[in-house]
Image: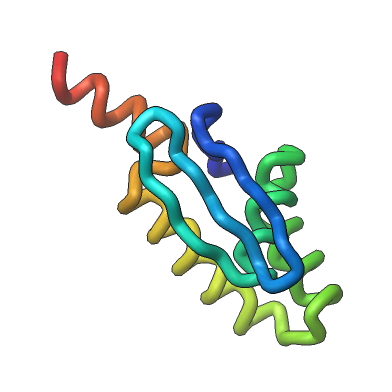
Length: 94
């Protein structure tokens, strides 16, 4: 299960949200689906559970949603917004 870094703050609006990485001072904009994925992950849901819930809420096939969620998680990892990625970066510096 991917863990969102504890330094991440999410602000929601009617058209999506803004993700702030307070450690790095970086901001990212999200659409409403990205906001919902983050909300579910922050509640401790597993990736399959997130896929199922997003599929139900937005009326898309689970296959399509799984690909989108996987891509979103990959992007979060590339931006070092996942706790596991940050740990790996710290360990590599030691």
